[in-house]
Length: 384
Image 1: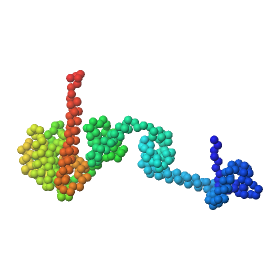
Image 2 (image 1 turned 90 degrees about the vertical axis):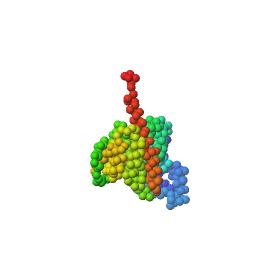
Image 3 (image 1 turned 180 degrees about the vertical axis):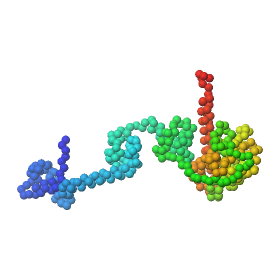
Image 4 (image 1 turned 90 degrees about the horizontal axis):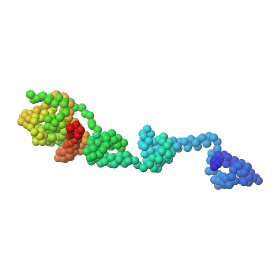
C-alpha cells in the first residue's frame, strides 16, 4: 500500500495559481504536477470560498518546525499530567504500574502511559485480560478482614496485633504478609508519642527495697505484679486510674478509678487483684515512691495479704516500665482519641478497654503459649 503524500500550504497555493492562468484547466495542471485533478479542484474551491483561512502558513521549514514543537509540547503536557496522577509508581513493581495505567485509562492514551512508565502495551493488555490468581483472591479476602478488624478497633492496632487477631480466628498467614498488605493499602495503627519525664524525690519505707531489679519476666502467674497511677482528662476534671498488672500474663488483675488519687483508690485496686489471686504464695508488688504507695495504710494492707512491697529508686521511672507501657498503650489507642464530657463517660470507656479489649487479648496470648508448651512436652510416639 502506497504512503499518502502530504503537501505544504505553499505547494497548494502555487498549484492553484497555475490554474488561474488563461487557457489552462485544473485537470491539465494536475496531470503536469502529478496529483489527482479532483484534489486540485478541491484546493481551488477552498481557496475561493475562504481565502483568509485556507492554507495558513508559508510552508517554510520554520513553520514546520514550529508546528512540530507545538505537537511535542502538547505531548509533554500530557505526560506531565499523567505523571501527576499516576501516584509515583515509576520505580515500583510492574503490577503497580499496570494498575496506575488502569486508573487513568479514560484520561490519557494507553500507549503514552506505557511509554512513560516503561512497560509494553502488549504486556498491559495481557495483564488486563488475565484472570485473577488464587493468591490475589486470597489477598483480597484477607484485606477485607483486615479492614473490618481495623475499623472495629477504632483504627488503633498495627500489623503485629492484627496478625495476632487473624491467627486467633484461624487464618493461616504470616506477619510479613499482613504488614505488606496494610502498608500497600495505607492501613496503620496509631504511633507512640515519646515524652520525657522527670522523677520526684520521695522516701522509701524502712525495710523496702527494689525486689524487681528491672526483671519483668515471670515464669508463673501471681508471682510478680506492678502498679501505678495515671490521670485521664475530662470536661468535669481529672479522673485518676490505678492498675495492678501481672507480669506473667500482662493481665490487668486489679484496677480502680476515682477523682482523687489517694491511698484508698490504690488499696481498692490491690484488693481486686488479691481477690483474683490463686493461692496464698507471696507476691512481689512493685511501685514507684508516690505518697499513696508509701502510706502506712497501704504498707499494712500489703503485709496482711502476703504481698512483698518493692519500690523503684529515685528518678528511675524505667523500674516500672511495664506499667508505664500499659498506660502509654491505653492513651495511644483510646484516651488520646476521645473527648470525655463526664468522668462517668471516661470510666465506661476505660472499663471497656480493659475488660473487653486488653484482657481478652492477653488471655488468648497465654492460651497460645500453653498450647505451644503442651506440644513441646507431649511425649513422642517413638521415644515415649
